[in-house]
Image (cartoon, rainbow, N blue to C red; front, side, top):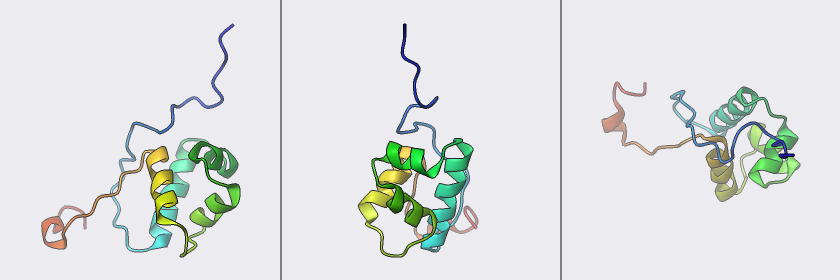
Length: 97
């Protein structure tokens, strides 16, 4: 008998989060992560496990803690299928505003 997967999606999520938003603060990143987690139908605990971070870290991430380790934040974004891009302001005029 085949074992049923705990989660219906493969992680990291290969599909990218498709909403374009300007990242202006830690809170903006937190909002994107919370929105994506709920889109995927996951709890904070499940998402923390998938991202291989502690539940406390993930809660602090979603609540906009300013001093989180950037490599862990980037890893969580990757696992959830959220891409971040650095774009020069002059190149972004009219595209992302």
